[in-house]
Length: 311
Image (cartoon, rainbow, N blue to C red; front, side, top):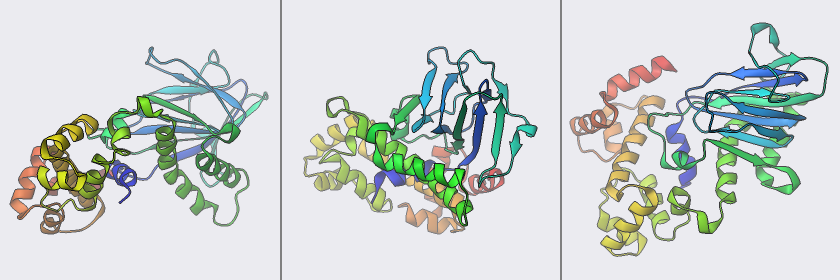
């Protein structure tokens, strides 16, 4: 069981949206806040990312190969220089010509090419791993750093610069995978001595097997004792270690993962409520519905209808 993949999949509420941005100095593009997480990949040239309505965040200088992830989808601007006025995207700036379409703006100065977009994530119930990320994550793939992320960036650049047969299917798949590459690269950058929380839990010899078991079998009748046995620790030692690293007691996380799994099944499948209940460890539809409403504030059927209407 790949815990990282499962954790991210549990938060996703739709496919990522993205567009290619081509700017020639002077240029500035204002991007509003989004209900999810924003991202940018600098395919060529240089630019600046300027946070808006967030005075505690400083402008970031970006160059080719850089990847930026905005955890909270914060409003921001992209520009050739922090002092360049940024304008909102206008319909006349958008044109087809790549698998995603292209926004073209600016003058006749140096060119920058970017892939810009956002991932639709459930911000109401963020996974602990995503909560642990900084507000703005900047990763560089230059000088051989993060080779897998760098390879994904290069593939995206090639497919967008020179579209060929199949590019329309390849590009969305690469963008979808990019989020996993970003989080993996961020985790790899954390020095062992400073690693804590979920980043540490994923590498912990006792907690990681317990997390994997919970994710693999949410319907199992887990107890602190049975999870401690998996971890090779006493009940008390395991409970303390799990709560310290994960941020909540073992059984609270079991319930969280069951409800997260249930919400995903309701959004993405036509499984009847009795099936969803059984697959998340509840012996009856009534018990499941009661637990789900306590977590989400609405009945499972209503959640499914609203999720489908919003998709």
